[in-house]
Image (tube, rainbow, N blue to C red; front, side, top):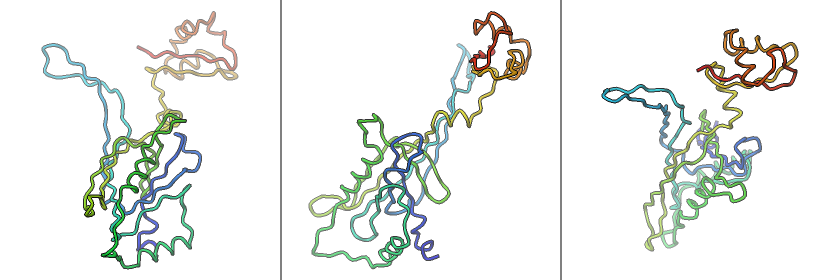
Length: 256
């Protein structure tokens, strides 16, 4: 109950992965310093526009649905007014002792030494930037990310980052920064194909012949018509539509 009231459990986190499969535990988990006040989601459908000469309208043909885009503003502050964020190895699941420690830190009154020099946020922002968009020379990739906050979850990659510094020390070094991040959703190709379940006859299909399969029945199940099996046999350069073997791959071309 206390943890929920203080927001310890519901702290937004960003998990950083090395691969697009998201199968292994993350290499790092970023717990943000302050939960964002808001976020913006964008969904975009792309059409191919065809317009004949002399006409005033265009024929929109579906092209694709782009991945979800979401924008978050992250605040970094080294003035000592709020507890700092955390970057931990792995999933960063808090133990009871570490959670109680966080509660204790949150309850401590903020105290800034008026005679001391406040740290800058430059190091925090740079570490945050390197984890989200640093280039991996071995994999030739930037990081794969997972945003987690309450019931929201998105597998994504960082598309852009804008950094705005404010509140400076006497020497001009910043002690506060707002980092606006645009993330674009990503999904592994195999998972995407499984989710979309493309079964339309105007798409190319590949099937593996199993026991008791016949070309006419396979063609009928895909095209919902039993008249195209001869064309499929010709397309696959089969001597006969009866000449199919178990384990053989058959391509079913789209209907034009």
